[in-house]
Length: 136
Image (cartoon, rainbow, N blue to C red; front, side, top):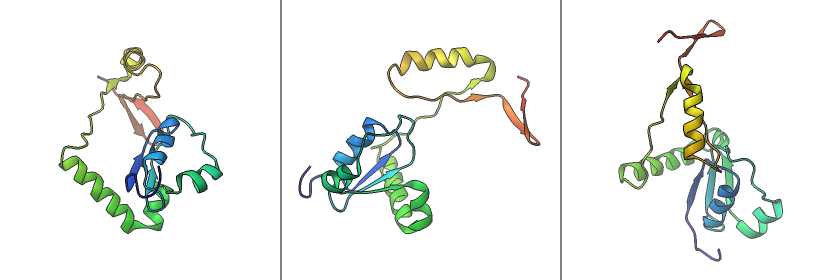
């Protein structure tokens, strides 16, 4: 991207090649990429690439919250605005009981082939400092 082309803000939650695409889509000089997850792994980005090619601000969400709470508030305001406008539509996660672990993994494999994905199994609770299986 050259000049002023690109978007002002990218919220990055995937990593890997997706982070590279987010950097490329961000407005040079003034654009910001806020990273809040990298389940797809590290991106093959060099310091030279960040400084001379992308020329954007990159910050992790935790640092942003602590160092610039006003900017974090603005970012979250924009995110919730996109959700309210129907541009983004968060999905409810599918949950599985612990005993359905093999089913959860099979469905993940079938629907996310070649992608990074995660599954959460319910049916546990903390008791003191240990986990205890909940009875169905």
